[in-house]
Image (cartoon, rainbow over all chains, first blue to last red; front, side, top):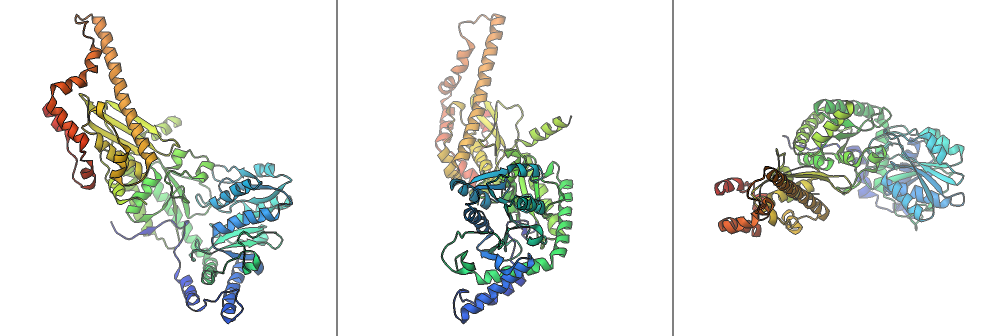
Length: 398
Length: 192
């Protein structure tokens, strides 16, 4: 077996591309000035930050002063939820989110609940789509914010953002979307889609880690959660990560330039992966089988095989994947997303998330499938539930 | 991140698999239904001569099961005491909940064996009564209850060997070294 490592966890993070690195290196070496300083060093940095901001704003069809840089997608999500909620407290105290949001949104909601806000968590169907009837029923006169993620990080489902934003705007509610996974894979025109606030992140699109951005429409009031400092128009303190921001802009530029070719490649690769996986290994179930999803995020359920054990076996063979519950190192945690789409905890533990990237090849996928088949066979041989579950399933069919 | 000890055991788990017609068997889910383990016991004359497990669980639990089944082999049922700290020190990792879960499930397997034995005794007692065997003074139940003690009295050499195993378990060697564990079954075949 070859010792070459295969990376199939691109939804967690991606490698930094050479073009991005080349754009960042001169900034790291030459432009150390604080972009908020009033001297030539500062002006140069400020210029770079501003042009990066302009580029990202253009990519999403926003105004330049509507894009704010943050340290991460999680910070942007927390800021959007807490900042908008606090700034609009006079209008109401009710917020609507879905059950399959990223933990940064859900944890912010928990914080807001302590602060006296009321949160409604929307159910999703077996594919991960929210129910519009339920959304309409959930809206109250006190509702100030709806936050629904545009593409899910575990199953890849893409929500009908435009329909949700229209529903929200009809009732005069602010609409925020966590687009970390979707950004760079699809043209997101915030004017057209009616998005009031949107979270983006650099490291999911072959950019550097430690940079995120929040788009906030000029019509929306938002309070800062990081205080002190005049950066980002006084809304988000902290010295700007100049090199990171430049890298982010470069990554956005590349992502939008190569979007068509990348998407085409990813779609073909994923289809090949899924068909080969289901052909080679029996009793594999693909979660959220819908066409309206990110093709490169594949959530697969291996009956009778613990996801954590399979992940470890694959890792020992040099293949990096993620369990069904990617955002935690707690081996006992069960994914809230998989539970929300109606999977029992013991089945949810049998889930592995594969997320392909533009650097993966057909050859790598062939190798991966062979190793998965072997590992699954080994683990099923010692599995206490495999025979039991397949028998139960056959019984149900009869 | 798993420690190398856990990974090594996980890569080549000992005693994994199924056992046909075990004397004691138990399977259980843990509290939040994220892991499932199953233990099989082969018991002859009150001594665990073989123990196997199957699991749909994370690498920790598989490593714990492997270590535990190795530990109990060759021990007497009445004297099987699983110490969580010994398992913990063997694997060198902190996972109290997982260890307790495995130990509890193993105890259920032992319980199953004991219940089966009691049932067997009762059944035999019934058949004995029906057949109206002459020796009614010595009930069969007492015989089985005293079985372990009788063994102790009758074969002192046997107890010495088992007690040394209990006091100085050699599972650490069998886990760290690739060398296979001592095969007790052959040993007992000679004795009985």
